[in-house]
Image (tube, rainbow, N blue to C red):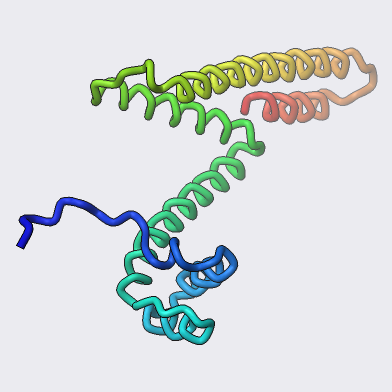
Length: 174
């Protein structure tokens, strides 16, 4: 009829016709692996006539986003549990964001004049990185001072001092 289909619909009836509370119910049903038919029947029971095809379009995008978020959560949990604190996660996010901005700038002919928000947010990210590095240096300095103070204590067995020192160094190395 009118040639090849070139436009992808970004909105479904689920996003345009359902109130947020009902859409939250749909999201929960999708996460619980309800079928599109079951979700369509659920919505009909609430007075909304939305086809399983429309739910399928919405569900595909929602579940892809949900899976990506779960992967990030799992990786974040692994980083935090392996490193012992959340600062490593903040560093990882900073590096990832920086990498993505650089890739975007290299791959595309980007006019930065219309990206003022991106530039502003990137500057804030860099400022937080500088603050984080100062904080890490402060932790290291305080740990070094604590070790020196502990080493001056008399009548503490050498192996106890060594264990305390290793424990403190273990904290500040991350």
